[in-house]
Length: 383
Image 1 (cartoon, one colour):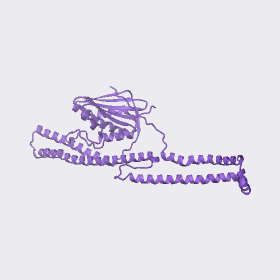
Image 2 (spheres, rainbow, N blue to C red):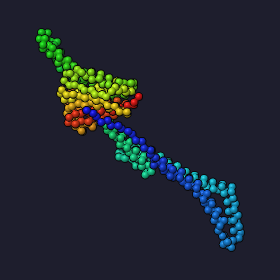
Image 3 (cartoon, helix red, strand yellow):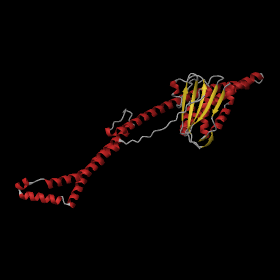
Image 4 (cartoon, rainbow, N blue to C red):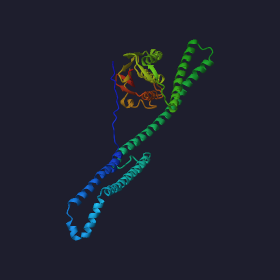
C-alpha cells in the first residue's frame, strides 16, 4: 500500500507597493518631465523670437521694440540662458519636492494612526487612502490574525483550566482505590494468598493510571514554560522507527495488535533525534489507542529527492471531519470521556506538529470509514 507524497513549493512574487509608486509618480517623473520641458520651452521661445515679425511692436513704439529685443538677446545668450533655465528648473524641483514630502508626511501620519487602530477592538477594519490600499489590506489582515490569535489563546487557556480541573478530579479516583485496597491488605494479615494477589494487582493498575494522570499534569506545565529548541545531528530514520516499535511491544502484545514496517531503503536525516522520536512516539501511541482490536498498524516510509514521507495508518473508527480539523490544536482531546484511557492531555499531536514544523516539515491527518492515516513530511537532501 502506498501514499501520495505532496511536494509543496512557495512562489515568490515581486510586488511594488502603491506607496513607492506614488513617490515615483508625484516626484521623480515630474522631475524627469521638467528636465525635458524647460530646454524645450527655451528652444521654442528662441524659435519664436528668431522667426516671427514684430513690426507691429516697432510701429507701436520703437523704444519698446529695441528694449525688448535687447532683453531677449541678453537672456538667450549662452551663460544667462543656462543660469535662467537652471533657476527655473530648481524652483519647480523644490515645489515638486515639497509636494512629495508633504504627501509622504500625510501618509506617515495615516500609517501611524492605522497602527494605533490595529489595537482598537471597537474598529472592525482600518481605512487608508487609495494609494495605500495594499498596505491597508495587510494591516487589516494583521488585525484579523491578531484577533484570531487572541481568541485562540483565550480558548486554549479555558481548555487548559478545564483539563486541570478534570485531572485533579480524576486523580482522586485511582488514589482512593489504592488507599482502600492497601488499607485492606494492611489490616488483614490472614488474607488468602489468591485474594491478596488480586488486591495487589488492582492497586498496581490504579497506581499506573495515577502515574499517567500526573504525567499529563507535567506535560501541561512543560508546554506552558518550555520552548522547543532543536539540536540537530545525523539520524538513521529506519533504526529510530524500529526502536520505537520495539518499545511498544508489551502494549501491542497485551492488546493483540501488530505493526508492519515498510521502507524502501536506509534513510539518513539531519534532525533532532530526541524531538523527532517524541513525534513518532505520540503518533504511534495515538494509533494504538484508537485502532480496532487485533488489528494491524502500518508504518510506511517513502523518499523523493526533496522530502521523506512517514505515514502511520491504523484501522478503526472514522474521525469526523469537524474533529479532524481540530486534532492538532492545543488541549483538544479526541475522546472527551475522562474515564477512557485514550483521553490524554490533548497535547501529544499539538507538540508533534510544532516539532515537525520546526524541522521545516508538515503533518496532516486523513480519516475514512476503514482507516486513519497520519502523514509526516520532512525535508530531505540527497548527499
